[in-house]
Image (cartoon, rainbow, N blue to C red; front, side):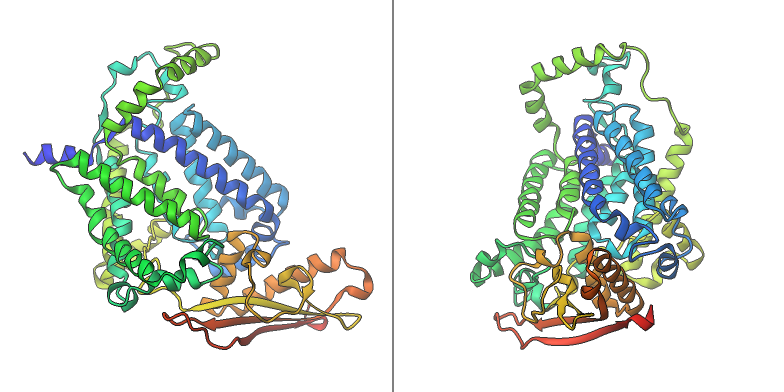
Length: 488
């Protein structure tokens, strides 16, 4: 009886895994593409996060292939390799090799610059970790089409330690986040979403339409809290499983589409949507597969031109017994680690914590918890030029303006820089701010005429405190660092 219930809860449809594989590969390509414009700034020694600064900020157990070279060529080479493996994963060709390689390169890339990461990155690398133990290429893949087995010869579902682990990861992400949301803004006042959308570097322009609707935002706040706290664990219900999961998946899909529309928080909603694909019940894939019979047949004919059926599926890289042992040990480790985020005395023993840091198991789902920030902050990089003119480097040389930007994209065209600066504010990182300032100084001077080169640079944090009622405090300026030519 218990085994039947466990299989019902922790089984994953192979077609769901195939959809997950395609989606996670797509997000990986999107992530790499959005990082490329800042490759020099974020990952090379010429940028504002050199390897020396990385060593200062990172634990020595954080291993990174990307830190083996500090040049743009080395980083670009690794990006190209990562893109190739992501394309292999997308197609389901040599799927196991592609998944393992993609996880290694993603973990390495994240370790290279931890100050530009968010919860979405943590979830991303963990989903890819568990994907290594799952049969992602069993359906809808080149590997499946070149296999000697017909789709009807395969089981419909897989139920293993890895399938249970990835489901628990998705559920635990939301449940633990809700448990940590202890502020009255979430549980009593219902003002959390208002505060989050009032933060200019987190919201999109459409958020301005929502802000005047206090009652709606209150309903959305309580709905978010209870969906995370109660809705996510309902996935583990062993009765009415298919229909409960269908409703929960639809609710969370709507939730994350809303985040995509109203908030600018990087890849987080896309990664979460990928995670929910493994929980979609099989009846959905039955309908989808019936409607795409022609497409599947066409794909089979196309692949058969390049690969002979029966030419063999992916070779087994790790013996099955060792794979199960590693999966079981990893699941136990992650459970203890997550318990430690709530009860530190019950967490992973200090002697074993380096393992979690090395494998990027060090997860913490404290998202907008215990409450969203109530400060709306932006930088002003006051540069004094040789001709006496004052400009703002943060706004690409525009005149100095201390008021809140109407569009934060004029300062932060991409999410990673925005995350870097918010981490500077939150953790008081003066040295990192100096490196950022020096980099922007160099970039300006390389393109400027001699009389418009920078003589002095002052970096300010400018902010307003936002109250739940919508009132904003007067603009406050805080000087973070001052740089001059003699300081270089």
